[in-house]
Image (cartoon, rainbow, N blue to C red; front, side):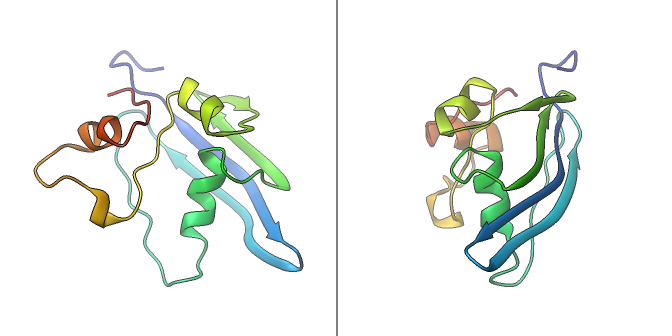
Length: 113
């Protein structure tokens, strides 16, 4: 955790399959402490699947999620929240004029801002 209380979040070669369909194929991502990122892409690109793996809704078949450089087994959303990982769903659930941290708190997710 950084001096500001923010954490680093990485995925390393994350793979998720649904039957014969590969939704994520070895996805690696680095999110520096205190930074904000957006996932953009076409429908079916794997954005939601990636976030759901990080937030504990879908277990990946391969790869790792790292929080502050330590590999974490995120078995469910409760474990993710204990690690400081929360999820804000589609844009229509956002409260205009609120920060990312405020929206996460409103959504009931844990947040380290």
